[in-house]
Length: 375
Image (cartoon, rainbow, N blue to C red):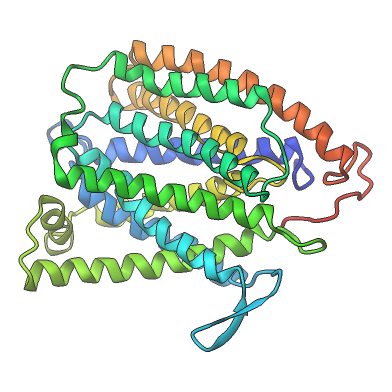
């Protein structure tokens, strides 16, 4: 087994490998279940797969959290919430979970908009990269983040944004006409705002650990997951009630209700496939919250890994299921991704030396110098 220390480059690489593998599986699952029925695929609608895979992913993640007791967290202190004394972090981790409950469905709903899949990917991946850099800037100015952003990180952001934007240059005119659609803009704005709040909270938690209080990423994930699950269940009930009693007849609402009233024959397999999405969530959060790194760096690592995994999934689907071969835009984008990876690799070398100098990371011979340790 490849043993690595918390906060080390080796641990980061392990998380990226796990994220990559299960993101590829998730990407292949989406392509398979949404494939046309007349070509031998299940032929699910976007909403059906969203519903079934989300159930599978959430059930899996929630089971892990409950079985392993990740709902407990090492805290800076206590606070009062609804008459109870609780860890003070719950006051902002629960809102982060609510934002997660917004991000999960809007991610798939983005693909149901009057917009190409490529442009949807540009908006989602590009926005997270830019949001991460903005979060760092805000927290530096407020004195929450004590670290500086390396020049290499800023350059990597530029190349990463170019990488995700390349598909726009190869797109057709009128791809952004969806801005005049109220429902589409509501979904898009909800996605961006929810992700901004969530990334800010994750980094606020990471950057405000008191001396001697470990950065308990598992506890953060566990509480966030419970809050997200409860929010999505309540949201689903609200949509059903709105459809039945208040005449909510938006296409997305009708499709959501139809996913339960007209269950697809492959629903069980879609739920099983969704467990890969649940596993992805673990790696994604742990990368976003990686010890000693800036939001800019972590956001880049997260999104660039997903971009490479997306291209790999497209290539594997072409190889084994007769899908489309990755186009020119995919390969050109990959070039800029690799350039960006080169710059963040240089930044990682600098950051590792910095963390060792400040005793936030073990030295090379393994002697324990770290003041704090993530769970």
